[in-house]
Length: 163
Image (tube, rainbow, N blue to C red):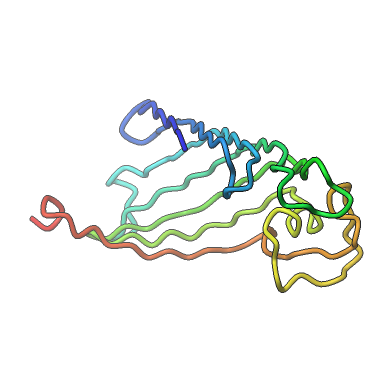
């Protein structure tokens, strides 16, 4: 996999960036994958701190472009491989910082259908729910790729941060 992630720091509070990822074989399927996105992050100045907490808001909008899998998988009805569906994804969140700790609260979602999600992930818990697509005409869909709320707590233990 190759990637490029430039960021432009507009000022002390605002950063705008982008990402570009490429793999010749997404999840070892033989299907090439390219992901592009735009990011933005606003970090509140110290004068806007909430007591001892610093904070920020950030978001990303991206598009995943996927190709066709190798034909070696021998999927009935797709003798030349599966042409995975392209899809958009996005997230928005708020983070709180205290010393070396960060709590990030984030909502993310995608427009990938449950049928295409099942074809892409091979979700073993997928069920029939009437979700159909050209690459998954069975009506079996996965909820693995749907909307999610994620809370992440991280702590920076690098030597420079512990001074």
